[in-house]
Length: 189
Image (tube, rainbow, N blue to C red; front, side, top):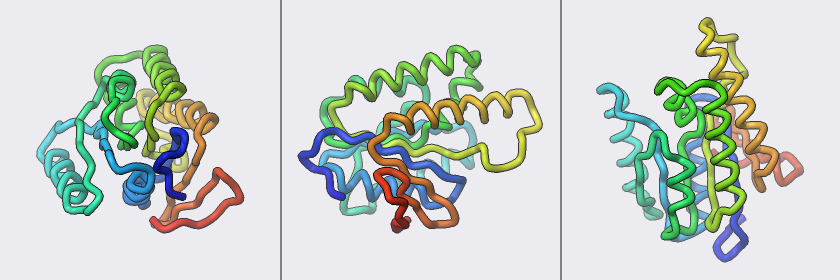
């Protein structure tokens, strides 16, 4: 499943927290191109997040297949549209980006419009794009209206992006299942 020289692929990797999705996405992105960009959507909101971001950066930097890293919590579609220097862009993660929008005060319609902006950019992509996202709809119903709104918006975004993705993977319990292209197959996390 290498990808260098192939037409630009859209890869969506979803799963729960600590499911192996990011590790798999890094390996998949590494197979798709030599010039790699990692777009991190997490914000350095507290000490724990700063430590987590530093740990993730160190993990990526220690690999032989190093990624350039760009931290962009809000302007994801614009960042993808502007990049011309990379063969593959890995976005980690879609749901954190959407959460940033909501916490920043965006209304549901604005978040949906931003997802449409992202889809428009993906439709005219020049490089491979690998998107990591958290599947948040498999657990308990969130207690708060904001939590339920986030879950619903994430599910809608996942469905919209999955509908146009060339490759679709689901990670659970350290195992990654390839859903598209079929047939379903187990991959290494």
